[in-house]
Figure 1 (cartoon, rainbow, N blue to C red):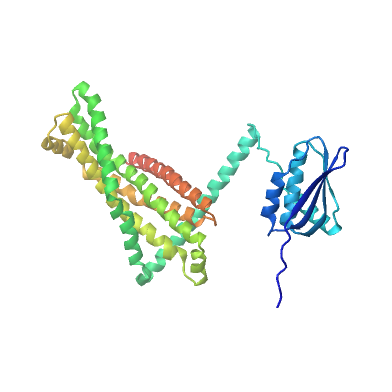
Figure 2 (cartoon, one colour; figure 1 turned 120 degrees about the horizontal axis):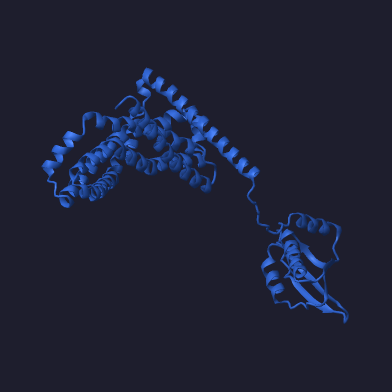
Length: 382
């Protein structure tokens, strides 16, 4: 039967020779098993500040990396306080260990000081443009893959994952109805109150109905809904795909021969493209309802007069203009969310960063797309 060798407790003895020298003799085992006791004993020592200190390691029985690092750290602290410290009794093998620790000793922290320069500004701008170019390529890649999968699904309808689409629709649409309706109701009420406050001075308070109706149906309803969907569903898509990326579930899909676009991307984007027009319509109704209540309470315009003026101010074309934008905005939000989710690396910091970037990019592009549609509809006279 083999018996485990018992550890020898680390010991240290401080000696002075009457001159300017002071010796610290170490003995026992300085290993990972005894490092706690050794550190405690070192903390009790009171080394004179005006004497040269020599650390003698010749009597140490067993020494590993932990013990050598503790000795090296103690020596560094003494030298940092202004004393010259030397090691004595170091064998060639142990000297190699101390040299290796010295090479891997982390350097002192030096904060970077980057002053403003034109070259640095141009370099940062160039890097941002390269990142934008790469993001555009990634979106085109997903869009092309999406088109290929859609053509396959049209030829083989059984490959369409209707259950996944229904689940994503429930999360993106049905779960978002309360917050979308509430926010739209408040926005409609604020538009009517602010518009009525100024138009009332000119005796044109009835035109608040025209202002709220056209603004909500053409612009505010769809933009507000798209922004809320980007912050709610878009971030959820990025977090879901990013978590799957971190857990290597997406790699597993590749290994078993399944298309990530068909299994994960297509159901989410289709559900979002179906959900956003419905949410936009609900947002329009809620905003007009809030506008009607405020005009009734604040401007003394009864509901019958409000509906009559609203019917004269808007047409079916006004409603369609807002609803036509919704699927395109949903496509933009879904593509950005999926691209950012698939770019997540194996850390929670990367997941948080890409989730944030997904929301920011989606909101920015939603506003850009709305501006493009506004110019297009103005050009064709709609």
